[in-house]
Image (cartoon, rainbow, N blue to C red; front, side):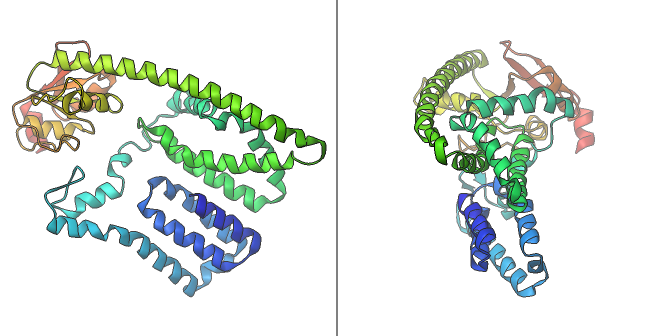
Length: 365
């Protein structure tokens, strides 16, 4: 992301076309890096159109771009070799069918979590969470004011300002639309663009008498870092302790012979630690399914198909009790549409999933 942005801004400043092609090549290679790079595409298209609209009318240039795209996607040619020659499992993915791995490359798991928020949730949950994250993430909160100053300074370079804002909002909105636990990782591209604005803002303050900023700046940053590290460390310690207590309680209440449906990280990671890690571990009678959907559970309870447990590298045997960990009452309706229902488990944190209606299950078949 950094290299792509640098080369694009260098091209916008110099007009040297090889800088643009270098940026597009790096961007194409990022197909093997992270899905958040997709969100940069509208900003790139805008910058090229605003700076060199004839680019889109040149078959030669578009052909080079197409070649770059092929080179980037060629990184995934190994999928077909894996499916043909490797064991049935590769890094937790069943590899008998190339389409399964291609779906994983396409972000199948992430796509299920996209655009699931209601408008009211944006106002009451998503945006306040993002504002809190901006204040907590190390330097980001401290540099918000210089970032705003940088945006103001760049107002005279409307193309650059619009490009960076499109890149920022594209990556940030893409991230905030995901109902996933490790959301803060997906916000990193937006933070990087904010740092570009902040650098421009600090640069504008560094002339004449304002050079005192460069004296006070390191002191403020050092103080903020010290506070942030201590604060985040305390928060992480509290979260780890709470998650560990929940995991211990769940494993004790689950008894023997159960398939646990986890609400996600960090609960799943802690359960795996106690089951197969260095904890009280090596529990061979309990299984944890982290990324699950009602259809998987219906098929398992109907003894039609066993889900594959990526971290434990196995298929759980049929006949286990299916216990969901910490499911909210609002999640009952999706289960009911698959012919499933919940009843209380041996702990307030556990509920047992069972086939409520064989007739509904048969109709779905």
